Image 1 (cartoon, rainbow, N blue to C red):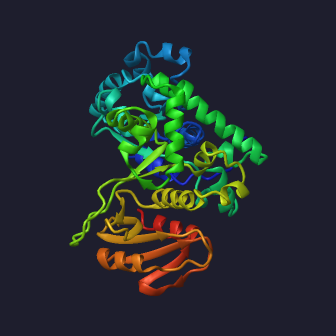
Image 2: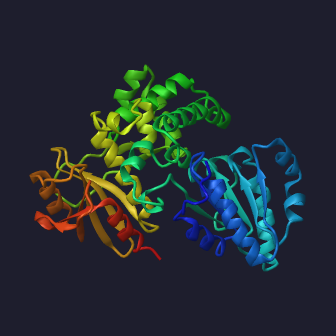
Image 3: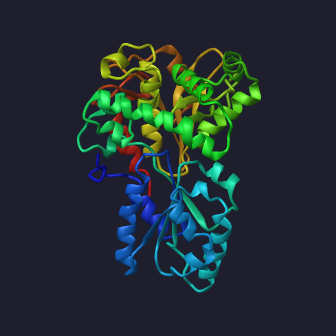
Length: 399
């Protein structure tokens, strides 16, 4: 189903980076809408430059052949924006790009030369090719969030997740089928193509275990024992899913308090729809009736807020060894500290543990995100607020 009507919030950021850097990498999982967004940005670039942009799919053997002599082919396209899709399949291109970019910079043609699309994180791209440090900016495109919907549909978005084809599917069954095929494609084709030799069944079990433990503290030994592998192997599995932008590792916040703090990160499967498919929860009723509902909602809120937060925001969580906790701590540009507690219900209560945590952390502002839309004050300096309103407020803090 077409995704063009959906407004992607990072589009303006992507265009701004192309106006500042010679190359920009647009990163995100497969099927998240990178190519659609890139074509839209390329059209804008063509109007500005007065020359058509061009697109190469580096999974396509025909397009790969064009780049056998990459300096010659790309060097002949001066003045045009080159969109290179699935860049992780040809990491050797980075060396050629560096030479082309440096030559153009010397001729005063500095910015907006290359838009690179990749299904892996910055770290994975850096490991597989020569660094373009100082010449490239990174922009991440995640699944849809509540700010990008044509109409408010947070429950449907939470249940189906934010991959456009999953969210826009005609029925819940069609959405579930799309997500199942997405998971299988990663396990059976995409991950083996990147090199790791991990049995698809083993990696699916690991991914499903992460979904069951959504938002829990990372315990490598427990996962290793369940999978009958060693701790280093299971850590490698986690690193891979993090690098593929499918899992988030949220670090702990270290406050200057005289308490023993948790040192392990929290781990989330980043898209709630993938969580639900891994657990075979394929409609609203199944999700709401499952014990993972609260943790799944927490992960959904965390992802939404981190996409809305301004660049250079540092995200973490606060937890002591006795269980005193704040779900999300945001260190915002300008030395502002926000604390966010997440509840799914419509009448959220403020417990003693949360009040203690807020006294420890001393945030500039503290919010309680809940399932409703009304904004009102709570005890302990908290404000109850809906997810969409807090996401909008965070996005207004950016440049």
